[in-house]
Length: 408
Image (tube, rainbow, N blue to C red; front, side, top):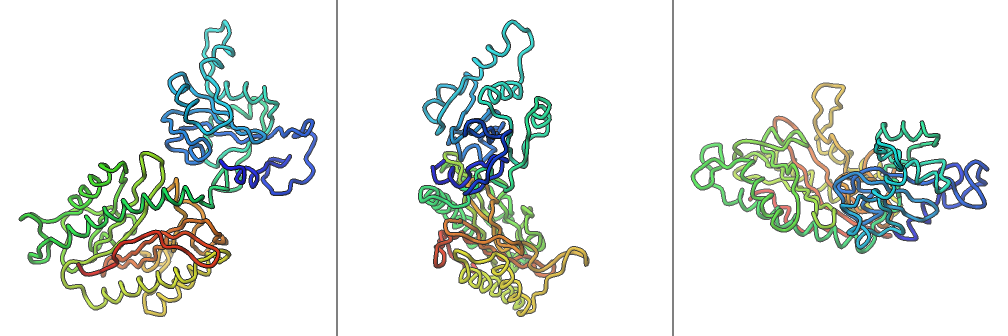
């Protein structure tokens, strides 16, 4: 974590974050030292805040706390030496030594929450800020031990993550490059297929979603990326935005391909969606694709530092409506049309703030976001086109390079 990030997240005496802290209650400050700390008890393989702060992949739950700008990572003997070499923290502590010291001559082995309690008390910490998904079991144990535990006010424990560093942008670009090559493979398989009746064939057999998805996964795995739940959804299946897709792909129907792999080396995601058709699409379907493509261009033209996300989303929604593609809400039967947000943040999580939606979020320089408008109707299928951009002061930089050809 950079000094800039920690400065932006400096703790006030009441446990909140602010660039300028108001006078703090005596109960939280002693001799100018804060009694409040950030606390995480989790695995960094699934907890992106923990990995972002420590730079250390570990599969099992560990204790991490940051107090007065110093990060402490408590590791088992299994991970201790590796952590001392690799972890980007100020202090690495042996869990085994802590347990032995706490246990003394007792037979009962202390749990991870008890170890955290002792270490926090030794540092004079009394108040804790935890993530919104912090386990209730640990929170109850800490409150029972006398700590004041509160949730962070944002999705991230360290809000500095919202603005990506040049190094992070480089890792996302690398992930997007791998994603683009995987997308080319998927599209080429569909392009090379043969139309027989209403079904696409390859090597004399029906071409299925599973065949395309397997090719994508194999390519990415060989390059150190995990492709989880890649979407290859044809026809009516594509009218449900997160339907994975299964079975034979049909001629003349759109195929939504959404690939979002994670690097097994550094944890950063790529994310890209393309929609293609093999065969003759209907005039209405072609018009729907053109509408989504133009809607994406509208969003791309608006994204820059300081723009309100709801203005971008609203402009795309209005354009779709003007073109005759209405959106029905879930309360009025089966939802159809533009039924999701225009985009979301991307980084160590596949879905991060900020979201380009009707909400109150404002895009800022350094944000990395997807731009993925879509339209979904059971009679036509689905169309979604997704790029990833870096928000800049005066506009944005598109980090995605891949064809947007509809007919293949």
